[in-house]
Image (cartoon, rainbow, N blue to C red; front, side):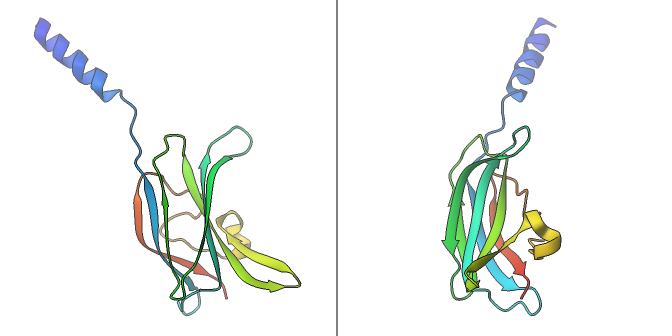
Length: 137
């Protein structure tokens, strides 16, 4: 009986360890929502964030130019402080010197679509392959 209790205690002890979150990678294409032709006139901005009382804390930010075929590839190293990622698309074309940014934060007004994921809260520690991000024309 004593061995059984010690065995249960050891199993319980190991099950209480923190989950180790590995690196996170994003690979895919940005396309226009209406006809899914490549969007290639801008940047993809991906931020790693930590939850804070009041406002989130931006830990890291990567801005990568989108290729001619609409593709992108962004990688983040393992960081136990990252709670979530968010995605923005920045248009290089300017009208009256104002750049346009499509963000999940303004999903209703900007129309950025990262389905099946939420552009605002993407879970860390995974490889996101074949992402299809849609922006309005």
